[in-house]
View 1 (cartoon, rainbow, N blue to C red):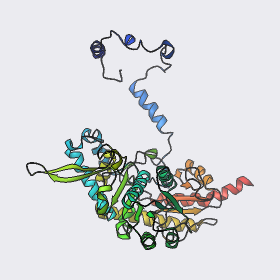
View 2: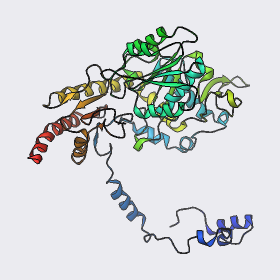
View 3: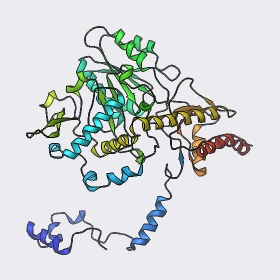
Length: 462
């Protein structure tokens, strides 16, 4: 069967319109040396049934959260996604809407983005939110550019506990700009307000603090934000940037409640599949005094000529829209499809549902952490509060456990000494994440695996 819907007659009609008699004549301008003079070396055609069987066989070789109990985190989390989201998002009017450049003509898309903005603003406890950005790392970088534009200052203080991918993106975006990125050292996995106070001065434009941070620990947003404001008393106040987990906002204090001027985060936990690392969804919200400098798109509500409720793109800050160097961002669009998924997810769960998800993450993570710490040879690397991720100190290299766990049905976590995590920990440091999807059976299996693994390793060495 043909895999395209173009019939020979339609193909000939197109050739007639452009004035050539055949496909060979159409491609005659391509040198013979650049053209394949034989059929493609393909296997014989298969029936649809045989093809489905082969694709199923290949898919079964994949290892992921669909067939393993996933304790991996580090920025992408295995949260439950209600079935209705995939069902509705697959409708043609949603799946093909993506990012209309003539947005004013698509009231449905604009209304969805407006509701998304409202939900993110409420989630973060801030005044406004944009219609989404590309993912969490670039959203953090855009938050910094927003602070630089708003203050006119040039020093940016960034916590070393920021996810290493985010930090790398921030340093890349800021490279070549008239600003200095100063990375603040952590003490016992956290940034202390004294460290902030010592680094801040009157030329400080922004302070970036993630919570939970790259180690899963909850940072002192309020203390650090107060410290940078107290240390910078001349000119415009530095803008405080909270990098947040949207699920954690269902249980912990919101960025706005802790004194943040800007909040940036990754929206993947809000109904977006892990998908081998993307595409994801950038979240950005801020206080109202930053509205006109916000990057990306802001959808507003208005009335049309007949007085009916309507939606429009109120602000777009890229260079095509506001005259070259007056642009505050090069972001051209928004993650329309994924923002719609997040809107569905938040609408379905509501505040109470989001809190229940967050509570399950919290309690299951702490239950597992206590049980692992009780295994001889294992301990938690850091003291203090965490949300749903924690660092385990293993008696052997963390990679050994990760490798050995896959055949028994576990994705055991992330090695902090790996290239992926830019070596932010020692070789025995294992970052473990727990979501509401992890059952008691999953937790028991993980504890049993860690308990047996060192014993079997000792037998192998003997």
